[in-house]
Image (tube, rainbow, N blue to C red; front, side, top):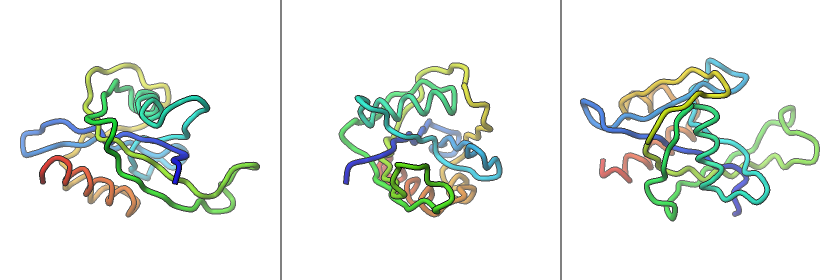
Length: 140
C-alpha cells in the first residue's frame, strides 16, 4: 500500500551498543514515539522522513539506505480523523544516521536510549516492532 506518512529511526553507536532517538508525541507528552509525519504533495517518503526528523527532533539525518524501510500501519480512532482524510495510516520508517543538529521547531522532549531501553520505553507496540526491525538491520 502507498504510504501516507514517513518517519526516521535515528541510531548512533553507544557505549553498550546502538542507541536510538525517541521523542514525545505531539499533544501527548507522556507517550514516547518515533518521529514521523504526513507526506506532503510532491514529496517522497524519504524527503518527508528527513523533514519530520528535523522538525520534531532538530536533527539533520541521512537514511542508511533509501531503498529499505519498515512499514507500519494502524487505524486512527474516529475522534482524531480530520475531515476528508482516511483513518488508515501507513508509515514507511527509514533507518537514519544523524549528521548534524539544528533547532527543533516543535519543542518536544528527546531521549537517546540504548535500543533495548527504547523498546521498553516506547508507548505503542508498533513502535517496538519498528525498533525490532532496526535491531535486525543493524545485525542484532
